[in-house]
Amino acid sequence: MYFINYFIMEGNILEAFYAADYFQLSGIQRIIIVKTYKDTLEKSCNENYSPEILSKLAETIPLTDDNIFLSSLVDAMAVIPLNTIEFGRLSIKGLRYFLSCTEKPFTTPEYEVFRYSAILAAKQVSDDAYKFFMERLPTLEQIEQNENLLQPEIKFITDHQKVAKELEPLTEFIDFRRIKGQILVDIIEPLEIVPAKILLKSNDSNLNNRLCLG
Image 1 (cartoon, rainbow, N blue to C red):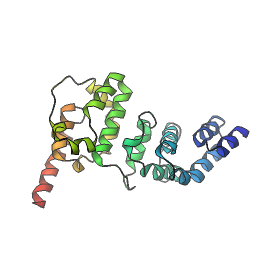
Image 2: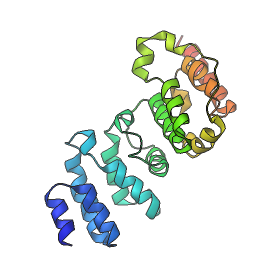
Image 3: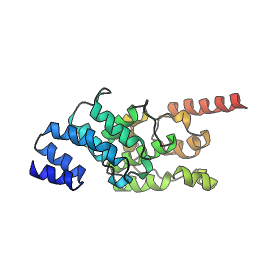
Image 4: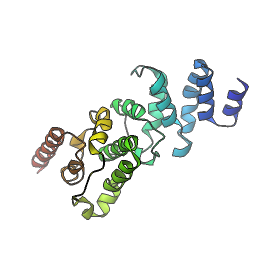
């Protein structure tokens, strides 16, 4: 208990949480989550430990919509753009729960949600897959600054079937209709990690939206 109090006093929230988890002090864990998450919102992304804590909880407790502690973590994460969270800080299960909370306002554009999910899935497969998808999936800012990034490249796709399997639990929570049709066709479809029927339906929706607006 002394060590946990020390960690909290020193501001080492993540260490305090893991210590409480090790000693099975669920009450202390609740205090850490509920009492400190608001403070983390005022800090930089690297000092906001909600991705790590959410990932830990995703491995240990049922993820339900009415859990006030999980809801607090989702609120803390919702203000962090996904592309600013280093890969390795957030687990697949943690990300899946986060994305499932669709009623929460997120700050991340849908393409960036896909990009982060795909790269995180690739990281679970191999270093080569991770490096490949990092290179093959530019950020939305890079796409907007350089239209040439939309030109498809024909090359061997590293472990795309394994990556697709890792990505599968996240795919249902990504709204591909909110991603531009050109990006779907030129960047996402060639990767062969999202079922073609999902992309085709999303691209048709994009076309219909453009026709209605026009």
